[in-house]
Image 1 (tube, helix red, strand yellow):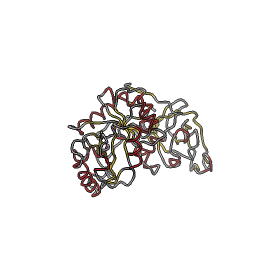
Image 2 (tube, rainbow, N blue to C red; image 1 turned 180 degrees about the vertical axis):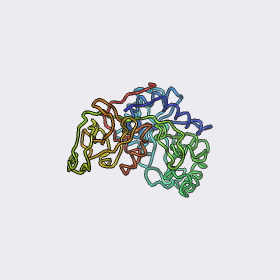
Image 3 (cartoon, one colour; image 1 turned 120 degrees about the vertical axis):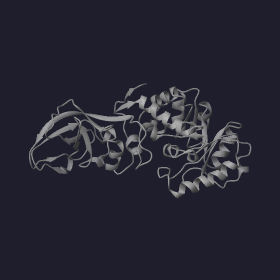
Image 4 (cartoon, rainbow, N blue to C red; image 1 turned 135 degrees about the vertical axis):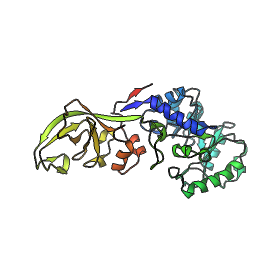
Amino acid sequence: MRIDLDALAANFRVFADAAAPGICAGVVKADAYGLGAVPVALRLWREGCRQYFVASCAEGVALRAVLPEARIFVFEGVWPEVLPMLLEADLVPVLNHSGQLACWRDGAPGRPAAVHFDTGMHRLGFAWETPVACFEGLPIALLMTHLACADEPGHPLNRLQIERFDRVRAAFPQVPVSIGNSAAILSGAALTGDVGRPGIGLLGCNPIPRSANPLARVATLEGQILQVRQVGAGETVGYGASYRAAAPMTLAVIGVGYADGLPRLLSNHGEVLVGGQRRPIVGRISMDLTAVDVTGLRAAAGDWVEFFGDGILLEEVAGWAQTVAYEVLTRLGPRLQRIYRGA
């Protein structure tokens, strides 16, 4: 997997401009969506990013080791088992319910925390109607909410969630707020708040489907051809004999499979780019290998083919696999070599 950190930096500037006069943080949870939290976060720091969001305490501790001066928020909050680690690494928990509030008050008196209000997503967060008195004495670093339909700017739930959150923020007039993920930031200031939280958009994925993508591609997944072989008419390919050649064909076997995170649903369905041409995946994707029809092409062992990048969009792969780009990226395994440009 080739990762262009210069493109990442360009995408960060797009979001920073869109978030102005607010600031832009970096969401680097799930190992920066599979691209590598450390190199991604370090490049964002060079571009002026000073606030980061991770999912868990463990992710925050790992990030703190390379970014000693950053402010790092932990989405899943606090509980007694991780409280000492949060304090030692100087992480800011995002409090989601009264139990976490009590844990933080008792275990870290006077230390700031963020507070997440659920305005209609119905995942984590305090009910948006929670009385202000519940937070008396707590130093609040940030008020947060998360939009359920930010990728559909015209969805009525966006307006309802903003209306609810406006009532929350009115009760905390001096506290900065954070609303917008990648899609919301690009949809305007009303959906952003003081701190934008781009994640998948930093990696170049289009956060608003059916609209032009202003972002640069960051990740390219390639695999190497291990063998080229001839298959006769009527012969089958791969496990389960799920593909049968209608005519003599040339097959390239590529050293990438589902153990590397390639979706098995691409079997007999997806495409790859071989020598600049799209060619179909044939047969079932196996643990380590994928077969591709390269009939008529000059393909040889050692050649590289593209699974996604500039020629085949990640969003296309996600569509073939009946999922979203987030899942495709975060499932990419540690066996893949990650090569960084612009580190």
